[in-house]
Image (cartoon, rainbow, N blue to C red; front, side, top):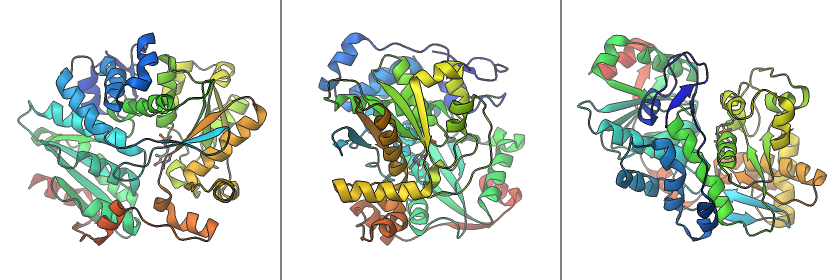
Length: 430
Ligand SMILES: *Cc1c(COP(=O)(O)O)cnc(C)c1O
């Protein structure tokens, strides 16, 4: 399998190079030259297959021969080594819980897969790989956890001092081993600027094998297809499901759409958005008009310009009429998000986090217009990650899962640093 750049100004690369580079040199996103088709027997056998086997069969054509089969099996087994339960909420609505991984959000699977691929690719290199990430919270902890203990890979995370939540800070700073947290006296933008400069510093890149763990990396994007097949594995209704995905950068929903184009049955897709609704408006008007992000309760979806929109266009073309045949979208306000958290808890005894609540509310709207159908929304984060919102909405106390309690007790270990690239360079050089 080869990958081309969506900007079409860079050469095609294989999976190994696409993973190491992250973004194409022309700043486009890598996209596979062909969309593989699932075999009928694979789709029929899904209820009988293990999660690791499903993952292996889905990803194998994308990886090609850049990773040997035995190693790819091991990587798949480690990637999906937790539960992805499909929980029935109402007669027609199910929740696919994607928050049972180590950092309690769906980004864990992609981060685990990518980290192990990079570890594999660095085996034959005499240099260790250094993964540099700037984080405002969640991405950093998923990446750090994903890379924890992976041989041949060192992770350096920059985060703005005093600007991440207490739990997030513990998740970033208590891992040890191959993970180093740099606590920067500055803002998230300062951190990002320092990382960007490191990537463009030729002298540094001669000395170190530097890479990013960006969310647009194919090795983080493609494994998200697994969720949709795990959902199918647990789906026992007569008709294929409507699938509703809480969306920000649209990586997750684009992975679902890719699996669908490979032959995975789905009745329809719904992109659930908060007030950051460029895509909802695009489906209405046919015009893509990016705006700057506004802050909402479902803050992992506060994205003004969804970076995977270009991948959606690769899959469906620019004809908005055709896109509407497969995808609908709703924009849910903070008030509606709270109302959905309350409604789902009071009527069905189920706890949604704000992102899942945007998903539930959107799916409910779609099903009102299509009452014969049934659907699944992706619950992308554990409610305890947004404990303030959920506790305020419901007037209850939420217990932290044991894994989080353990992290909160551990001691923070970070290296303080002033903002400014020279400080980062000195650190990386030594
Ligand atoms: C990242 C994230 C999303 C949005 O996913 P995209 O792939 O960026 O669309 C939704 N919910 C949670 C909890 C997230 O962390």
